[in-house]
Image 1: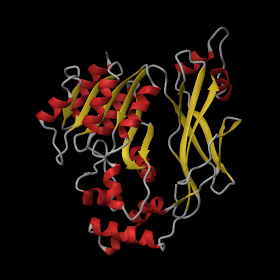
Image 2: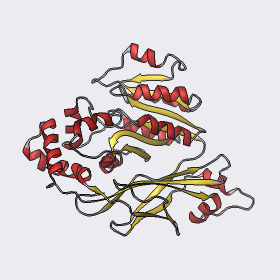
Image 3: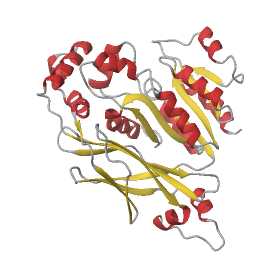
Image 4: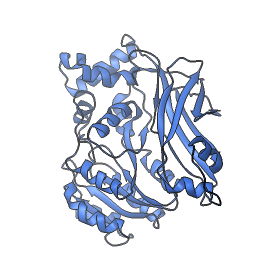
Length: 359
């Protein structure tokens, strides 16, 4: 996506999964945004960028650097509202029930029968076999095309990943868990977000690849704004993190930048995590986050609400807000002993997680 040049579509990595244990019906999830270029000449935009520069203590040349211009472009883009969203899956075409909202956002859930999905994927069903079971047994990648009407942005092609009914899933935070962000203080957060190339946390890509080899699916859930999806995906791809679904926050650049940025870090993640746990009731979950924000509190509440599914919580100890014994004891008071583990380096989880995944 490059909202800085022409109208475009941003598509979150799509995925599909069975709607029930019968495997007779499947759901294809397609979410995204449609936007047109923003103007740096607008008064509110100039004010917001000037305020960001002041908060980051940025030098004038840094605000003209390609990193900053590329990162800020989606934030000043304007949503393409009230557009019809069309999704092509194989040779079948669907129109989402709701048009793009005021921010250009859309959320689609398309239901397909197992036989229809097998025909789209050109899967040969052996005599006497159940289509849903054949579909669930292998890692079939589903080609998808997304477009809008009227055609103000180019069609986007992508591939949906299958999430089987049973298995292991990893819900992973991004900032200060796999990406070195240094969320606190706000100045550091903004500078690392807009002025600097993204960096990964040592050892996490290798750890996650090992989990993926054991069959884990990944869900990257973050308080980062959706406008950072492209650079975050690029970071994951370049460092060979496993593919997965992305769940980011809605955010609009405005005059209340500081208040919004702070509130953005504090709200909404729990709802996404609970939705994932509810959508995949027979999957086992590892929750991975850091001590810098509210991950321990959010994850422990999820474990209390979904005790059968949450098998382990791993919290990376960060310098900005260390995990104290008192905080950990309070959070895990009513949880299974040993469910929550605090670590300093990814290597500490290798043997522990191997044992966990064998259960």
